Image 1 (cartoon, helix red, strand yellow):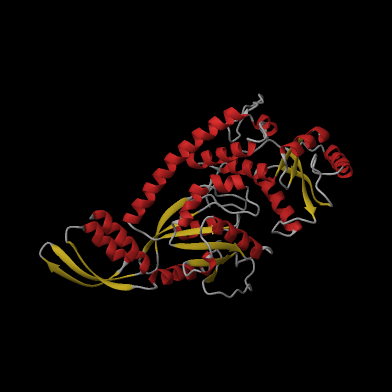
Image 2: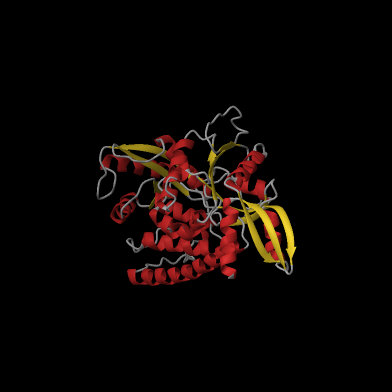
Length: 426
């Protein structure tokens, strides 16, 4: 597996609290949710000194918690010399500021934590711009930067460039100006991506998008199948930038595998909007493969969380479509796991067991609804002839002057892409 240098924040001691209310709508069980947040903190090397679930009867509008809980938190913070408190919920600007005043330390919520992780991991120009846009959108109502505490610790390696020792107060006008510039830059990148997608359709190859909850093993599977070197490690949000690789299926058909950003429960709205351009690769995919961590007790809920995001992007009822596959990964950890379903595959991306089953399933889907068509094409069009051999079954060939008359068997995806390609030539 490829190694990657991740910026390490100087040892910052943190406390984590997950407020559990009677109106709590979190999809995961409280214990699983708290464990996930601990792992989010570990993903950027924060030292977790304590983590607990706090039951609340009512959320206080001024400081989120009541005086008794705040006093208990203050004692725990002082006792363990905690420098940062993570509240695994959504804090209003007033609640955040009041908590910081009372507790005398930096306080952030779930959105800010995830934004920081995304800031650490984004590598491409587009990824960095998307993170910056999400951060600015989040900060617009706050007018101060949440991570100055950590930026001082790490000498300005933050995702906005970081001021080092200097704390910068961003007013609304400056934020708005930055947002406008970033959106313009992203629009240009989006146009470029559109041209790239159009070029792929002209080639054309079916696109297989790997999606799933963060840390389910998408990148490990991607690497296993394509022999790529995408960063894959037991960390939340190890992959943020879409990676694509061409691959030949057992049938000889060529496809493009796309590894996408991992999803998470309660993904910040700012990030869904900012990463829409990246997620558009999923919308363009011919087959969507959701990778599930079968060893995770909450894998069913994680599956639902991913589907809800896909639905919000426009892929309604994708789970009932023929071009949707569910991969139950990490069979090396639970060999006796059983699952039923039309398009389901069990495998271990780590050791490769079952991967051929996935490739055969993809081949099977692409081969459905095959049709025999007749083509009359220039004999000199080597590129098109080569593509037809790779993506269809040539049944007969006859020369007719400078043209070739072909009888070829194509699946529905290949036929659609061929029609798109031919229409652009005319």
